[in-house]
Length: 587
Image (cartoon, rainbow, N blue to C red):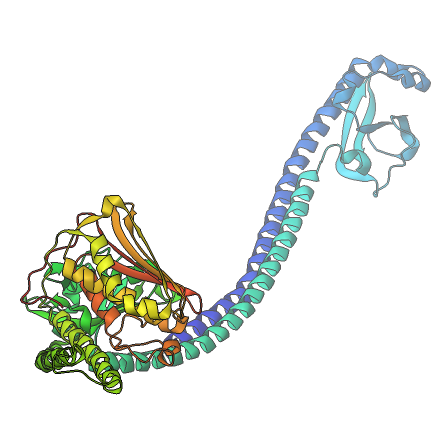
């Protein structure tokens, strides 16, 4: 809240307070004065009117009395007592008027000839202003008629209830309005006190808000500086897959300004490709993170690429991290971080080519050693002693392990370079499995393993690259043999599951600890629980076959429980493995 706003509020409060204190009582007193003024004028007017009406009625009544007396003048010659039977016409017209008849032309108490109401003692206190004297001459005798109205009867002529009612109502109205005004005044004062408290609180909150705004502004600037200086490209994505934010390096990498990207689908801004094919939303790590609320990752060896606005295609690593639902509601739901790894890819490519070259160069002398060892064991150079045979056999076993390792290195380098071919043809998978089992027969016999197979006749012939299928079965069965104790059980199955072809290898061996399961397909990785039990193993086999399977359009998964066993499960479309062009075949 600014200083001007605070002064304006205080000024309004001051004016409101003054207006309330002054205007409330003034209005009440003003209404009371008007009411009393109206009451006075109403009373005055009513008095004048009623007095005129009373005088008119009185004159009319006295005229009727005089006329009645004149019409009955013979009564004056009679005895005075006979006038008691004197009857006047139209009694209603002069009701309330009293009169006395005097002999002579002077009103004297000793000359009363007739008194209409002897009970009333005529005094100045009980006679109203309505009185009249008339003279009559009857047969030469003069009589005086004195008519008057007492104060009691005068009320019948002058009714003053209207001004009284107006005065009472005006007084009640004035008091009521005055009370209401005081109530309003009290309520407004309370409201003013509350407003002052609220204003004070608002002023305090205003100071807090200014401090918070200042802190937020500072933090926003710091965050913007951090985001701008990041080497990682960062994009904020909504729950609907719309781009809401991009840092500067992301704009530079994609070739798009933030305003051009805002509100667009993330697949338009950051399209992901693998094997020259656009990754669909169903398989996109970004959309998987949005849907499953779990981190989506793209690693160096996943060979995922993207394309900028100019059409340049480059490899990336990527992480799609979902925010908590409280933070993401109505805003950014996923933070996508990616990095151009063209340089890393080039270095890795050179390294892989070196490994491939070295493995290829090692392969020939190792093969030569193997031939000579076999010749010695076969006695081609003459008989050998038993002690010599034992040593030569150890040389042969070591040579086989070296050849196996070199072949794996060569195969992994070809897989990473993407130069291997996939040539699917109708193949009898049962023969491949039986051949691999026969290859491992010495180990199976030595460890007294129980090998069981289960093949479906419908999937006996499958459209596959037999060489690659052999590599897959070799690695899975070899691992089962290595990591299962003596006299263990292994089962190899081939069949159909819904619209997919599947193969599985199940053992009751050592199992994979939960903490190691997420890394099991990583290069050169071996679980801790098997390193002491089985020294042999390169940590390359599962990485290699996973890459082969995915390149061929399949999937691989596993379930495992430590000390109970492991099952690897591989699936392909029923149509078979997907073909891939390359320059070399895996061995």
